[in-house]
Image (tube, rainbow over all chains, first blue to last red; front, side):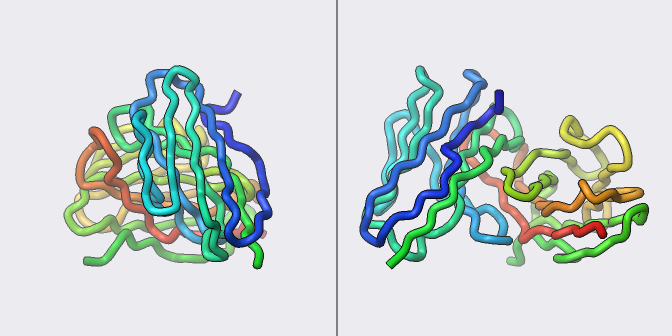
Length: 110
Length: 116
């Protein structure tokens, strides 16, 4: 079983749609959680951290359920510029040894 | 303040040759991490280094791969006798601290290795 598993995608949605990505992780001792965005042939960039209380940044909302070891990302009012691969990332603890999911590809079309 | 600098950005090697990838961390950062991304996969941790020390190399293949972060100069990821399966994007990241809560890791733009 992979340490971090994500919906494989791709998700093809029209502009303005709401899309949700799911992620599960296997290490119950994991301490920190993130969503990264990666454009084609670019480095991953931090989109947002994920907290148990849930957090929102504009059109993006992230949720963490520690009991279920489940992380989600909701994107509302999708824009063409949201087209990218979204990576679920877990940090077990200690130093910055990040565990990445394989990513979910999102394509937003006009 | 320049970000994490990696070079070369693109590298083509024939099977059996050596590949050397360099990474200069952000100014003031003394912690360097190397990750590899195979096609259609997520990034995989390879090694974590501090100046002159390898802290965690649990993700490094047992043979042909080595990494260093000397007192002076960039961190180097060295791949000897490359094979086609080494073709991947290699990302370097740096941080000012060893970790702690939150995330203070910064990625370079990556080095794309193609083995022909």
